[in-house]
Image (cartoon, rainbow, N blue to C red):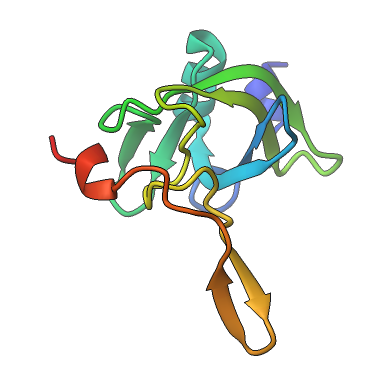
Length: 130
């Protein structure tokens, strides 16, 4: 059996993916992959996702230069979530979020409101000026 056949794809043929920084354990982002994206990720050693809004493959860093080097791919116990252990490339420290932050999970619930608790490392307008 093909390793891709062992994944429980959702109704749209997608699987949720978590990108975790290998060295720190920080969870950097959540995205989706279809079969082709997961296959390309395994082949290239760089994260390739499926953009639901654009309905196309999205090689992380294709515009920003913030490539995700994949060291390890894991599948959860239900075979329906993929975990990528990655190194975020292209900026030091690594920027995974389109807001110019290290992680997409930069907001913390403080009482009854969400507060940004991680700084912007680079202005998004400078990142996506292409």
